[in-house]
Figure 1 (cartoon, one colour):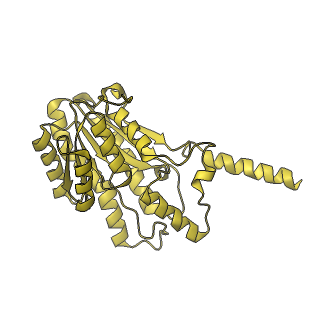
Figure 2 (cartoon, helix red, strand yellow):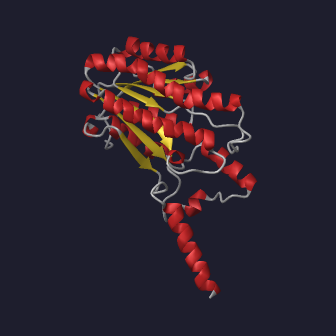
Length: 277
């Protein structure tokens, strides 16, 4: 028996972006923890594969685009219709500009709209529609997946970082406005995870000549986050055991947002000066 097995028994979750990477891992972890899950993504073929893998008794897939408010409303309604309630909303679906690194001057309106509509408008309206059933039952948890770029500026990632910073503040508003109605909200500042999206960003950094060996620069002995390990953190935050945690921005990033890279830069500089002297 795992540490999280059964901790979400009787709960129902709506999880976005389940076709690959972290979203797929979160959906799997929630089902394993006893929850009933509606997973959603734009790629119906990948959703069907996950549905076949997890079974249909406690998992259902809905094809949707969260940048469309009508789809957000439909997803919440489908979850309540299928499983009778909605206890947890996990806003994971996100997009980055193409290419992933883009200066402010090179960013056009279409790129801005695509990123903001998916990464900010989607979670906002999913929360808007989820709050109804959560308030009616007197409880609920809304978790949003942000990024360390919400706290630390990275050259070439202004649009994506702005969208993630907005999520952190949206979370605080939900926590304050709905505390007395039993609804909790928290944001994860996610560091590097071993996913396809992370790999694409790493490749883009390589093309610019920027440092890219994140694993080599990580905390000694600690690789890039494994998606399944991050998923376990979300299971814990969704459980009743985390009932006192709301309005929080929680870093899961090997101390990146705490100042890891600045610390390493200082020490590398000092070491270089000593070697030169």
